[in-house]
Image (tube, rainbow, N blue to C red):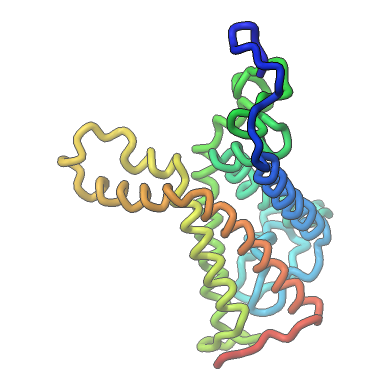
Amino acid sequence: MHHPARAAIAARHLRTDRWWLAPAVTAGGLLAFIVYSTWRAFSNADYYAAPYVSPFYSPCLADNCAPMRGGPNLDLFGSWWGLSPALLILIFPLGFRLTCYYYRKAYYRGFWASPPACAVAEPHQKYSGETRFPLIMQNIHRYAFYAAVPVAGILTYDTVLTFRDEHYAWGHMGLGSLIFLVNIVLIWAYTLSCHSCRHIIGGRLRHFSKHPVRYRLWGWVGRLNARHMLLAWASLISVAACDFYVYLVASGAFDDPRFF
């Protein structure tokens, strides 16, 4: 941002590298996920093929959900809900990711150029940070984390259910089971690498020596937190891939290979 108190340099910046490439790729990746997830959330079709249920539709909270034997059917919303049941549940993981510290940096830079890159002046004349609506809503991140944990737990349950066949018999594993397993590991790694999780575990401790268990947990979460950006992207890709796999199987475009 140009300001009278700063050095009087006529150029917008002095960088000669392709500084715009990183925010452009970030914006493109996030936009691709937004378009795909919006299509899938509103489609209200091809989200269940026994024993697989799309993570976009789990738990299924409406009366118009596809019947899932032993699956995450929780008929909390009656027949009056005529829209896609995905819209009832996606608000929780979406709220968690939207308020995530890494994703804030990603879409602030990628979509709003705030800032576009290090040592590149902002195009905005004013900066109010996250002190005004709607950005003040970013302060709900810790509560979004509390909501994301049970959702991850339900997705873990869904992953366990994938070790059945299409007739719901246990003791089977398909390619989908492997995809679900990779996805839930990445989902938990991303969730637990959250800055709020790290603070909850050890952020308010004054003497680590008096809390050895929490100190060790804090150290583990800290190592995950160092890879928060990588886990944010990996889990975003894996959850989309998981949903797309279910779509292919449910639509009949692909048959789920069975390992045993």
